[in-house]
Image (tube, rainbow, N blue to C red; front, side, top):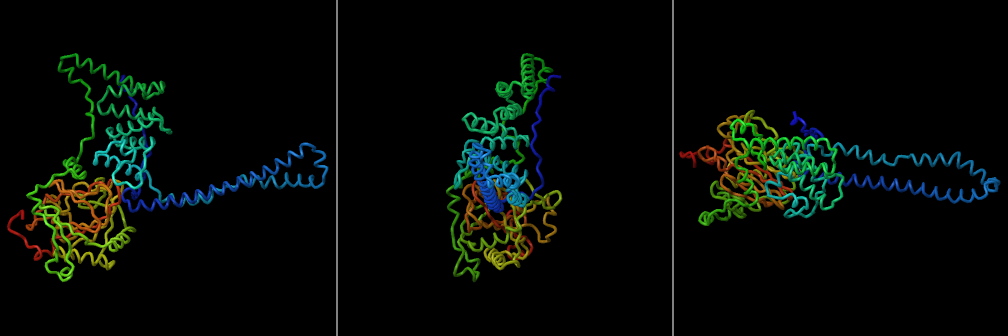
Length: 534
């Protein structure tokens, strides 16, 4: 039948398994040095080739002069015994040497270096992951394709542009994920840059091929037909476009017939197309979460703001903080979120980062069904765990948390250090285990996560806030500070208002470290109350 003519098969290379450079900006910086080393090696190869060509050129010029003279009087030239000897020598020996020089491969060093370095290269997974990150940033921060393509992002130090090939690649990644909304946006951007005269290896036919089908998949049949006709004007023999054209015309004719008929049976036969726009989201609070990430959250009333204070905190007369109390600021009232300023030094931060870097691996989450750790698309970062006995600085940091919170850290989890990648994020989640996850921390034997302490170990140029969608709070990264909140009420019940997220990093490099404190050991430090929600 006629609708079988539609041809839609456009394939991309399959990804290979890989640790994932795109999930950590810190590890991606190593790639910069790798590429610099390769460029140096490439320049050495170019120099070697230039030296080789210079030798050949000098040889050619010398022989050009010699043969020009010899051909004017061949007999007289070879009549000279020295010329005769040198002619024999040149043709028997020197031309062979020249042949060896021409055949000599100067690329051995470069190819060898490239082969060694290739094992550390990103692969398809990294490229696709970085592409998806750009799409995620586009949605979260309401960025249009032209803004991203021109590199007009807030806080950028090194402006960069996307070529037609780059835009086309982003569109293809979206297409492979059946994300036709973003396919349309980026194919239109590629087409726009081609129309503006940008020179590219990608032609309009290829772009229109993807674009027309993406538009069709979103239900805009008129536009899909128009784009297909435009494609056929450029390439009348395009097999897929010719098939699609017939199919689209058939569908439109069928819809006209249905619209003319008042029969319910005929109405039931009407072809339904997908609604145009972004795909249905699995995250119910997506809109609120993204608004908070953009700084468009709920504004606290003046009456509530008056109850927020800054103070010096001595850790309940802790000797370490009596003479040098910690600077404490209320960030939010319910749940109570407290920020400690200047609570970790730059030197301590560097030591923690240096300890963590060699161990960074893809961050995991608790699978509620299995109770085991697994990677997830909604958490894009790399993390490492540091024990107090490994380094005095880590031990000192742990004790500082205990002194300031009054909670026992001996039952806490190790210090987790995280570095976020391209568009790095951790979508809304709870730190504590809910009632439907009774075995989440069973192996630890220390009860539920009673509280969270989060160090910010870097400033972030744009994005990267910690947001609480349930209450509308946004906490922005500031190097050297830490935030603290209780995940459980004193009764042991979970505080669902602490559901929080790490917003995607738009520009910059985000380093954090956190300590999850558990219930065991806090019985007398934070006694239970009779009220469930206190």
